[in-house]
Image 1 (cartoon, helix red, strand yellow):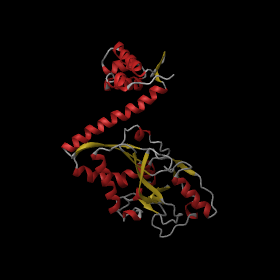
Image 2: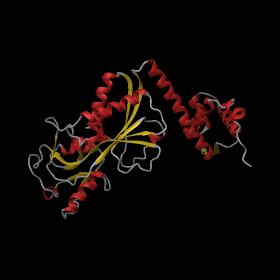
Image 3: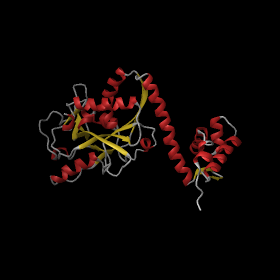
Image 4: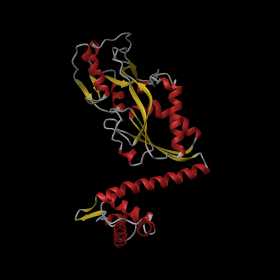
Length: 326
């Protein structure tokens, strides 16, 4: 018979946040010795804390072995809950600080590279002027997989992405569509086709193409457009996800590539790139903000999201803005 854990006598009076911190540090470091060294305490003290924690819960949290320690199924559950508990405490402290002074705080943002210049940079410029004491942390998010573990592990507050899959089954995510983007074909301003008023798909078949990997939005859009007119996909000169590398190579005037239109929103007299007048099939590509459900964001993060929404509502050049934001 499974022993029922009595919260009041076994947990409420005996479980300390320090114990959970020690437990999570051990898992992160992979051994009790490394955790003890990291925290500046003795290994016997760490071992005693874990022994007391396992005794209070009545289950083994860690499997010990010659290679270190690994969490059991009970340990993995405790890690998940402890992470959420510590995050809520941090958010609570941040909220209290914000209530005392609404101009401070921290916002941790994940963003795909193609949205950094188009959306994130101008939003940060405006936000940092209004809230100069808010600390902003930006992390490049890989939209090829969109597993987004950092959001689920609460090391990010929000993620700004172009999804490559639907989030219909991600029940732990809040998904907010900002606008629909579209794909365009671009070259460097010194390319032989850069100043043409009309360019057909057939004319760009033999160009040295740079694209993202097969299966991605960029690649699929070009492949579908060519297939619709009876053309095969041309050989790809370079396959890369790096936006900066593609821009640098196109600036030489030799290469051709496909970009989301919003990524080209800085296309002006100082830009080395030129959008070609090539007709591609209309296939909207949504840009979304993702946040974690059942998690209260601190006021600074909430204000930042409001600034993103305001930027999208007021911007028209270079973006295909959803009618709900018009």
